[in-house]
Image (cartoon, rainbow, N blue to C red; front, side):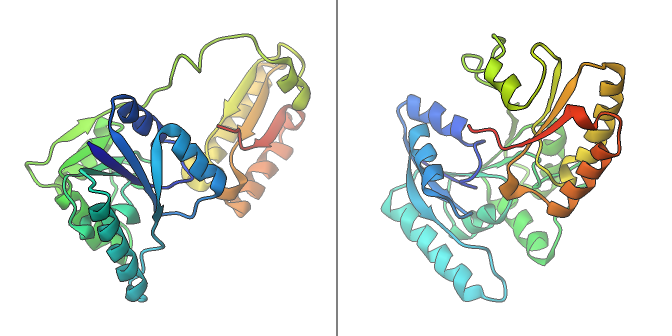
Length: 265
């Protein structure tokens, strides 16, 4: 089959899907709804997909821009003879996909900002109409949790299957091993000290203020523990970061917390 992933090309969540189907012998393609760099395109290609290009923001007022991108998507899917279109996240890419009329259409919801909490409702003028439209036109929904599956169910057709596929890691890559000395040196941490890692994005949705409160308590009880905040600066909320850093600076563990930026894939 010829499968096209339609996602944020800056993310890594879809890489595992591309690798899985590519290794199974399928032809993989990728389109992005966010601007991507040459290095990000390279990573997509290494995962096993051919990069097709992308669309711009979904405009309502400047509808001619949206129409242009929609026509590009339709033409590209036809030209590449795509069998399945798979959207990651329930956002503007899913709106484009729904309006393209392509089937089968798969949508994956992951809770990273698309579906949040049991009381979730589409927010904003466009989302209130286009998000339910996308869910109704999907032929399959996958979700990372039963909670999110239950939340989106009322917006889907009764006949649409919703499969819960839990996230995980590749144990061939991530497994207990020797701690690298160079990281202790890089972050000025005593060798052997317990380390607590927070890899969530620096934005209010990630609740880092609650994580900071917990770290302050934990590190107070474990005097030799250190904490690391890892996050890409390209996706940070600058005002929120000031708040988090102030919480740490005003705490008794300020000298044992490191803000280390992004960790390479």
